[in-house]
Length: 551
Image (cartoon, rainbow, N blue to C red):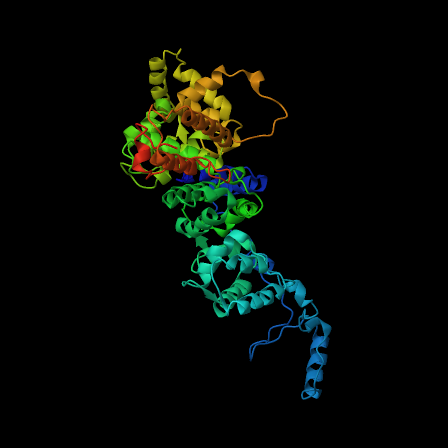
């Protein structure tokens, strides 16, 4: 994100005015000015000795006089007494008088009060009460299996050391690169975990990165999600369709980065992981047999919707789309000027002529839920044409001109540019009247309405025609994305059910095999899964449809 550069001249002027407004400074300047008028040079430091005494530390011991220098005393009587005393007791040990005693040493302070206790724990706060019994209980399991266990037995190992179940495959691969793990390999990893990682987030990052990094990248999640596909009861219908696993993994990873990686660095830090709900959601997979009930990240129905939408515009099915393809999304209701910005590196970090499936995941999530924090930043980057950290009135007008063209095509009554900009300003209530910052949009109550005015004509019109009384009170709040995914999934399933595949010919064994394959892909084969528009569906199945594989 481009940060705004402060205006130094304005700040200096502000500080100067503040300095001149001080009464003492004003009086001093007036006196100096009168001295200059009378031809006198004003004294910058009126009393240097006084100033030196004010800023110098107090002297606890009189400095020794230089040799040969006369000592000036205020009383001749005291001088004679002093000289006599000095002569008679020249070689005696004198106790210094209180006036010239040594400075007091503050050794009586409690040392514990001088030490600031540690407060920053990037790897988690150490727990002195953490027991080592879990590690000891693993030893018999290895002994029963000739001191080595495979991936199937590692679920027991994971639970014995109090780690979530679906950490087992990353944990196994962090211990060994072979087909089995010895107790020595496991104990080496566990000792490193126990020594360096003191909470679940630090352990998770250490395991997935195999101890090589303090952050996670997209590739680190692949084996974990593959294990969910292989072992979760809600994904059992994909056991016989491994060709569909890659797209599901890519979708889940894209959603993780979208929701967790708030820095847009494509590197998930421990702090970002702690601020997210990912580890809690991952742990709920142990207790929830229906994968679709876990709407965050892992829902198969949500994946089904995302890939269906991508399939509809990816006409050549090469998992790449260009500007003409993405313009067709949602019946061309998205502002084409905003879509052009997607290819200029605003959200993909490089100028390109194509968008990948991963890019489309971010686009669809941001388009359908503009209230999400990442979506707010996503569309701000798109609308900030010059990258100065502000959306100016010119930029608002630039995007709204394209909306006016769509209104004319739809035969809808046009709303003037001035009226819409005034409406947008009223929604956001920006700090500056002529420009809008990212903080202004995050602070407002309706960021989705603000963006839809300039980016999606159909959603803007739907909001204008919506009956305010249609909002039901007392309902559990649901995100715009979950509402969209649920609606689209029902429509996609209804469309598939309306297709008749019998076509007046007798059903043979090959056709029954095709129907069984379709049931597997759609999720009817068990576990409560959703459908899937696969990238490599059987050619025989594709014969029944014109532009997408049968589900």
